[in-house]
Length: 301
Ligand code: ZN
Image 1 (cartoon, rainbow, N blue to C red):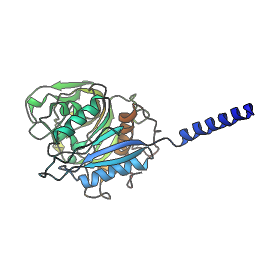
Image 2 (image 1 turned 180 degrees about the horizontal axis):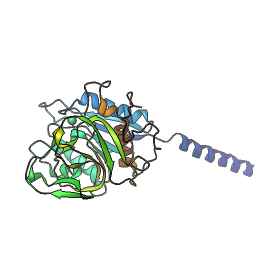
Image 3 (image 1 turned 90 degrees about the vertical axis):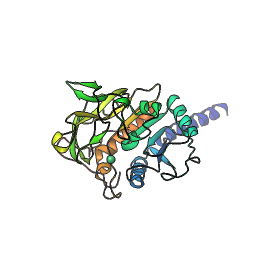
Image 4 (image 1 turned 135 degrees about the vertical axis):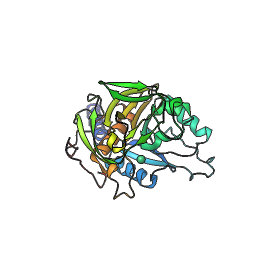
């Protein structure tokens, strides 16, 4: 009888172990949005679909009041989430939400800075340290140096001038600067991104931890002429911060090339998992873009 009980317990333990391996709990992600100089009504749904269609994430939204409205009700609880994705560029959050966000980040929270989120809050010192680089909204040499790739290293340049600009949207190649990082491991060193903006002349504390991808902002297309840092991680205490400047939202989910790019989606998925856990368990996809051909996942999966 005792032996039988032991066997039953062993079988139960084995089954439970197998089940936990099969049905891994999805990572909990929060997308913060509601104001943006971009089409956040499209981008936050695209982000949700990309993350949830992978089966790796459950996504909630924190949607702020509209621009100019009373923000005092916008109190966000970040604590249940393993990763917070910022798709917000607008009015100041209430002090309580700022405090909670810093508390979440300082305790080692995962953050993804997506596209124009790096325009937000030019006067909030800690926020700019969490982004490392930002643009527009009056940024200039007082915001910190420019940072760009030159002579095989990341250069910081204190020369005066605007913070944040971009040339005409186009397809452009991205080049890996740290191919061994978990977010990039197994992906090609150079690949063609779908039509998008290429942010240049960004400025800030420039506390970049691992520079992942750069792109050349061609002068003849209205760019800075520099190899610009577009995807990187940020050095900020224990936090895991993934900064993804790509992904200018289109007019609808159907017409949204920068976010329908397989490369963008894979970076968002890998960067979000890394921000949440410090690891990337996702295999290298077969449909990743090559150096000469763009690839799309038009239905975000
Ligand atoms: Zn944009």
